[in-house]
Length: 116
Image (tube, rainbow, N blue to C red; front, side, top):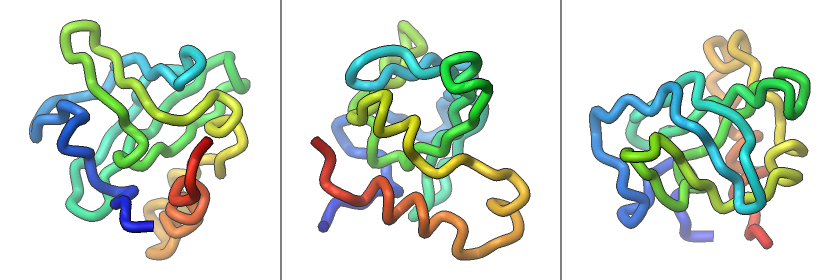
């Protein structure tokens, strides 16, 4: 697959320096939570979403490549995955993210698959 899962799509409306923390996140079939943190790192840009009560406080990592568009006026990020696809994704683990260089590979494998 040639899609860069770790890069913001040119059509998503992302602009370097915009703080997305606190923005709502909408899957293709409904609300999933709010952005807890985000990265603009070239080659590994992502969002960490706090799902709140939706999946019992689970935090999920979403590569920037799944972002369909960003609405800065509504402070909402729309992603091209369903709630079930996000719920079934590997859980974000802050300690492993900081300490294991290959940690993001599991997310690349999961989100890098063609989506429905």
